[in-house]
Amino acid sequence: MSEPFDLFLSGTVFLDIVFTGLGDLPARGTEQLVDGMGSCPGGIANLGIAASRLGLRTTLAAAFGDDAYGDFCWTTLADQEQVDLGPSRRFSHWHSPVTVSMVIDRDRAMLTHMHPPPVPPKELLPQVPDARIGFAHLEPEPYEWYADAAASGMRLFADIGWDPAEKWSSSVLDQLENFHGFVPNSVEAMAYTHTDDPHDAVHALAEHVPVAVVTCGGQGALGVDSITGEEEWVPSLPVNAHDPTGAGDVFGAAFVLGTLQDWPLRQRLAFANLCAALSVQHVGGSLAAPGWGDIIDWLAGARARAAAGSQTAAEHVASYAFLADVMPPSGRLNVRRAAATIARISDATPPAARRD
Image (cartoon, rainbow, N blue to C red; front, side, top):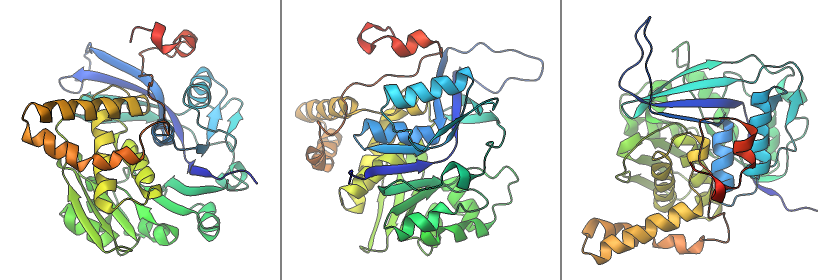
């Protein structure tokens, strides 16, 4: 029998086009020039690429169109980022979903165009791949594979997105009965639990899943592990945030790695915070995810600042000493960043020969 994957993902892949450098949203009838742009696979691809860059064997089930957008997303995931697309399918005459993300004052607003996939989820995924952990994006209605995967012993994690109707029905959380962990952001967590504070929200979610985490952007992350009895808040790392697109997915991928390593909750949160902090310094959600080279560089910089007398850096070095257990060769050192174009030549040119 072949080895199981580390992570199985199911969801929607978007072509993400990210604009940065906006002072405000464009007013009606006006045009703005922006100083930054990146194109990359988005949606569930954010998590898949982030996980693969950390060395996790990742497989993804998603629908892809046969248009140029679908070609770009498929090639980037499979060939460049080494995400297994065995459970995924291409569909003729189906428009690939597209999201435009506009970064404004370290936050973002998004526009999305998409059509429902040509086949229902059960037909797209007749059999769940063998994996140690599964990660899903909760929809209004649960997918049948949740129960099958949980029954097979797969530990399931989930996140959730914005409710376009803004009804925030708590019944969505009933789907979590088959899940091990839930990792929403603070806005989503408070909305679905009808609470006014992230601390109250994470405790409300802990009644649904063994491991509840609420990410709070620049304020860090809260977590409750009911299995071990741990409850932690870990502050975020100070960085020059440039583009927050996909940072929550990067956090989720890093938290999965920490789970597979059986780290204490505080270390899982700290590592996820670090990876998310490194990602927001680059344009483009999925292709902003750090590789091990980025993590090694950050740790080397922290050690240099600590040697120069920085107490904060010394605390970071001590807090992240556990990373020695998972340093390469478990992941790739060098990774590609998002480029403005989706032209084939940008995919084919070796990173060393490119000017990003």
